[in-house]
Amino acid sequence: MNSSATARFHNSPEEAEELSAIGERLLRAADAVDILPTPLDQLYAAARVRAYDLDLDAPHGSLRGFLERAGGALRRVLQKVRGITDLRERVVYIPQGDTKPRERFVRAHELSHNVIPWQRFEDEHIDETRDLTAGARRIFDQEANYLAAEFLFQGERFKERARSYAASMNATVKLARLHGTSHQATLWKYAEVQDERVVVAMYYPSKYNGNLERWKAVPSPAFRRRFPDMRVPEILFAGHPWRAAIDLRQDLDGEIILSCGSDGEAEFRWEARWNGYALFILLRRMPQLAGIGRLIRGIAD
Image 1 (cartoon, rainbow, N blue to C red):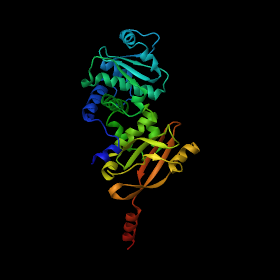
Image 2: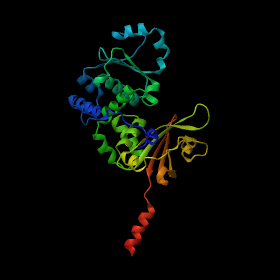
Image 3: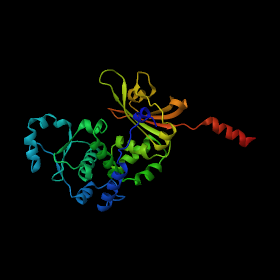
Image 4: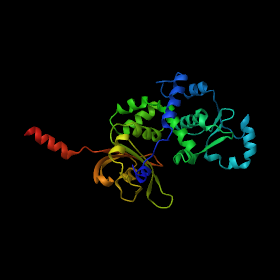
C-alpha cells in the first residue's frame, strides 16, 4: 500500500501484537476474562497499581511534590487534564466529573502506561484532553489507547461478539452498553474487527467555517484490502447528505457513490449519527447487484 493511501486510514501501533499479549496476561491474572464490563479495579489490583481521585486542592503523597514543582502551570491547564500517572510509584490520579464510559477509558489508559514495560521513565505522565480526543499524537499515548481498548473490549473476544450482529450503527450502541464504553471507542473497535467491508469516519465542525472536517477513518481489514485507495470525504460542505443528521437531530441512512481511486467508483450504504459535538458515519459496501442479476438470469435459463 502506498504512503498516501495509508495516511487516509487510522493504523494500529507497530507493537500491537505485543500489546495484545500484555492485555491478555493481565485479564487472566485478574480473573477478569469474559466479565463485562471489565472490572478495572481487579486489573489494578493484579498489576499492583493504585488509583486515586484527583483533587488538586488537597493533593497527597508523591503528587504533592509534583504540583509544587509544576507551580501554577498545571492549575492553568486543569480543565484539560484527563489523568496523571506517577510511574515511579505506580500511582494513577483520575479527575472526576466525566461520563462513566470516559472515566473508564481514562482509568484503562493510565493503567496501560504502568504495565507497558518500555514506557518506564522517571517523570510523571500527564494526559490532556487533546491527547485523548485528537488521536494519540504521541506514540506512548497511541500504545496506551490501544492497550486500554484491549482491556475494555477483552481482546479477541470482542471480535466474536461484534460479528454476531449485522453491521449497523445500532449494533455498536448495544456493544457499547455491554462493555461500558463510549459509542466513539466502540465504533473504532467495531470497524477494526469486522469481517464485512465497512469503514467508520468521524467529523468535527470546523472552527473557521460551517464545514465538517474529518478527524479519523477506521476501515475493517476486508475494506482496507479491497479499497486501499478509497477516499472517504475529508470535508463535508453544505448540502452533503450526511449533514442532514445534524440539521434534523436524528439518525439517518442512505446510499452514496464514492471514488475508490484506481478501482473507479462504488456504491455504499451509509448511516449517520450526531451526538451533539461530532458526526459519526458508518459506511458499508453495497452488494454488486449486476452480478446478482446475472446469476439469477443464469438460474432462470
